Image (cartoon, rainbow, N blue to C red):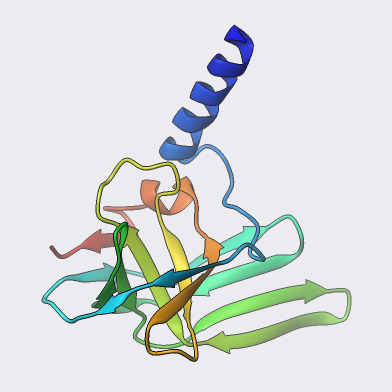
Length: 148
């Protein structure tokens, strides 16, 4: 029992510090959100790409992301242009342009620090399709910043 508790604590600490990789891009969750606008923004100084062991990658474009929605856990920031979801294969790669952005937790220290989202067909929901993991959080200040 002690081993399980210690393992859980180490995993939690590593995840929040960015030592564990992000979750699989195929994981997703439908979130109910309230659409709203505020002066909150986040700014990426450069494109940011996250690769995964299953030959997939997600690229977030450089620019200013504007606050567009909120739920109990996250603020949602719309990307200035399309996110790129890339699948690598032996003959090259396939790219998909996705309308969406980044969700940042309202509280800084939670197990899953940030996620990319894809706009859904509904006016009431956004789909989180790719958890960014702690790797995104540790880049704050160098590659991206909060403007709120």
